[in-house]
Amino acid sequence: MGTPGPKYQRIKDELRAEVARDEYEAGAPFITQNQLRERFGVSSTTAVRALNDLVAEGLLVRRRGLGTFVADPDGRTCGPAQRSGVVACVISGQGPYQSEVLRGIESGCSERGLRLFFSDSAVQMTATGHADHAASLARQDQALRQAAEDRVDGIILYPVQGSPDPAVLEELRRLRIPMVLVDRYFPGFAVDAVTADNYDVGYRLTEHLLADGHTRIATLWGETQCTSVHDRMTGHKQALRAHDQPLLPRFTALRSYTALPEEDRRRLLSELLASAQPPTALLCAHGFAVATAAADLASLGIAVPDEIVLAGMDDAGPYDLLPLTSFAARLPAGEIGGRAVEQLVKRIAERAAGEDPYRDAEQIVLPVRIRTRESVPVRLRTVAARRP
Image 1: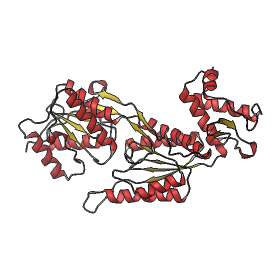
Image 2: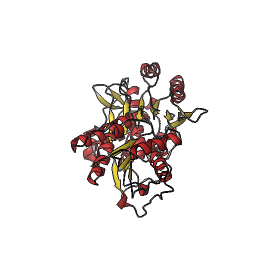
Image 3: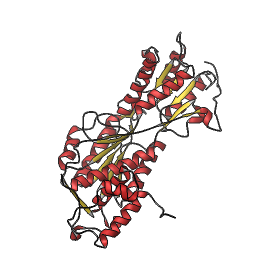
Image 4: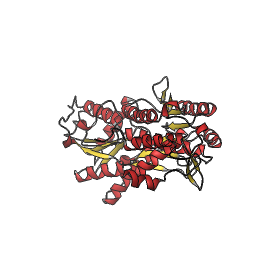
């Protein structure tokens, strides 16, 4: 029976033991990625991850254009427990989706002996109950400045919506402090990002609704100024075009439904439903939008899914949204967090080798899963509370 644990971890343990037994001389070329693949029968991804971690630990060093070499014994650590790498994690909010991303980040850092410092840049609310995005951006920028001042080894950022201070980003680049974004990316700034395939979310959910007979689909959003939303909207529109459906401005408007006061939300739904060709489906940004729309529709005397169906674009919400929706996307939240740590460790190792961690920025896009109402044992319906 093989040793339990991830393959890359077993490979690291064996290689670390071989170096400790002086099977490789200090300064000598180390086993290559291809040799690792052949020796252990693993994928390139697993081999690269094992090598990157050993570089981050200080056991190996990379020399640009030459390869990977065994580090001098005087500069080595004895393993993850003796390292003191510090990662700053700046994350927006603490909903179920964000929490799962954070669990992936925590697990990845724990595996590598990295210390994780957490800052919450959650959306701030004004005295009138409206979202204060400017205040949230200010908190995020301050957290990034603090990370720069503390000279952390790396940063993982789940951005709030809007554009961060360019001066802060440039300072991080000048200091060569590697950063990896999760869930979304900055279009005008070359930095690594790990996201779900948000275009596919919008496209495939729309295709499912169209196949189910819903040609009039209205979108309801939460945030509006972030790439995840824009990519989903692009996918939604492209699916409509691919199936020769018109793009109706009143249905595809990029507006924040969940940020509206209750009276304004219900007025918006009433106007949509009272039109000559009302929507038969609502494509909701996330679980919070699904739950809010279901409650608003019930108060208007509209039952779900008997009179209108709901679809959810991600898992952020107070509960599993699938029983209340006809279709829902499941995002790989934990994997996003884990892959972000993996990418950050790679960049930390490059920086240690004297390379620029911002060169050749990558956007890692992970696949999503679309679930249907029929796949769950419990299905919910809303009861029309009253007719206006």
